[in-house]
Amino acid sequence: MKALIKKTADLRGRRILIVLLAFFLFAAGIPTTGADALPAQEITTEMTLDQAIDYALEHNPDLQSSKFETVRREGAAKTARAALLPQIDVFGDINHAGHDHAYPPATAPQVIRFSDTIYMAGAELKVLVWDFQQTSSELAAAREHIFSSQFLQGRQKQQVAYNVASLYLKALTYDDLMEAAQSTRKSLQALMTQTRELADAGRAVPADVLKISSRLAQIESDLATLEAGRRVTINQLAADMGFEGDLPPLVYALPDKAVPIVSESVEEMIREAISNRPDLVSQQHEIRAAMAQETAAHRSQWPRIELRAGVYEYGGNEPTSSAGPQGVSPDNAADDWAVGLRVTFPFFDAGKRAGQIESAAAQAQLAKTAERKLRLNIEKEVKSALAELESAEKRVEATRQSVVQANEVLRNERLKYEAGRSVINFVLDSEAALLTNQSLLRQAQRSVSIARLILDLSLGRVHQEWKSL
Image (cartoon, rainbow, N blue to C red; front, side, top):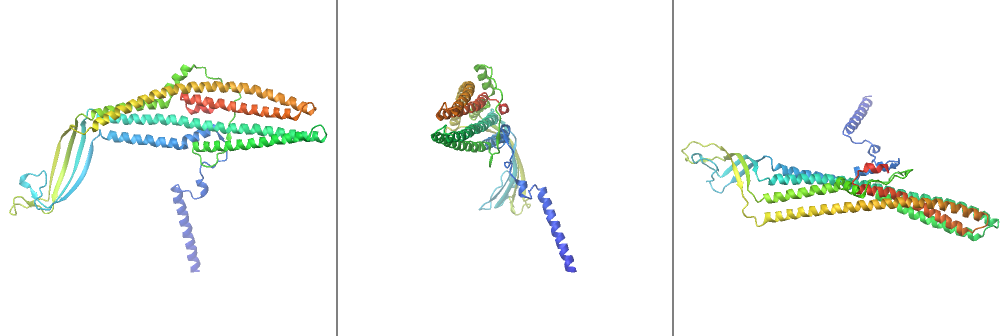
């Protein structure tokens, strides 16, 4: 009976221990089962273009790196700012001399102590009084670098959103082409059944069946090529999104009505791009940073004034007084303080500052040249994007009419073939022409959306506007 009671108590103790352990794991945020730690990527729902862009803006590796670059520049600005603020150093020294006549520094002659080991501790205050704004110019340059990184990060977000949207639409273009090819395959299979029936009735030749089989084989080959291209595009999309695993099905519907081309003139668009492009604003901050750095390099040749103050404590092991053994026994420690101004004037540095000035001046010119080049590229990008959009709109209108005509031609050729007034070659050619025109229409429709993305990207518009495409 005692053994049973003891065993029951042990089980209760183990249960209590397990409950406490589970409670602590839950409080610490540690998952107790593998189901709690499932990654966010393991979703089976469909993914819209909005969700794809939002996910990429959160998980894209390049954007994460740009965030760390901004943090690094903020750290550099803190370092530059620290030089303008008071700084206090606390120190301690111990010196052991090989003779018995070491003089503790800063002591009056009447209280000089002699000891072979001397201890010193203290604190020193250093404050920058005036350096002709050299340090403040360095701080201004560091802050401009931060602003530049922030605006550049904004531009990178736009580029990431564009890349994701472009690849998303490209993947759907493959879906469109595969859908058109599958529709043609279904039509050819129906034609194959009908031709076999006509051949059995003596109204068609067996060679017609072979021709249809050859065309079906070509369709299967095209489908395999399209599937491979789609997989490559999907993999690239997942990589740009920072998505691990297989992407869920993509969902996107083409607009029912064509969105009219913007009515602004090219000059107005260029002015909008010049005022909105984050990378141009970033480069302008880089120019200011380079100019501030050049000012700091020039001011480094001027005097520097600092306020310094300190308190010190000195001590020794069994010190001997300068008055000799007959004198009063000395104390083991003595304290002191000091305060004053230090003026530093650069006299000779073997060309160090001259090199820094030349380097800073060249960096400022490089930044200005890069800004001018970027302006020219913006103008070129806007004009090219607008031309591509207009061309894509025209292609949509032209191919839409071609699809209507190809459908009518195919319908007539089938009726003629069924009536025995045409040959299978004309039907197959009409099928191929319809497939080609349907593919061109789908590509043109997607190219309009992509062209709008490119135009918005060149204008520096935010990605939220792209979600309405």
